[in-house]
Image (cartoon, rainbow, N blue to C red; front, top):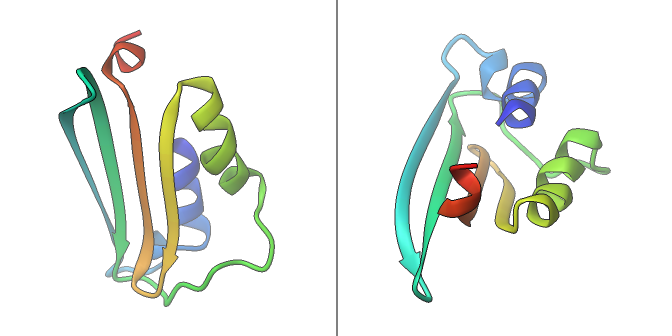
Length: 95
């Protein structure tokens, strides 16, 4: 979440006075295991386009998180704002 917030402040929705971030969470069962799902949605900022190259923060979000906490990560640069969803084992989230 720190990397998403940092990027929103530097380049995304939080660079604009009307920009905002919606952060939601839920738990769900999948294959008998409980999971925590965090959803990040930016809006009200400048139009977003996928970057030509990914910086350290994006790489951390996309790759490292999945390996470290056995999570699934969706990170999209939608025209209206960045969207990210992180799904992880509830067991890992509680540690």
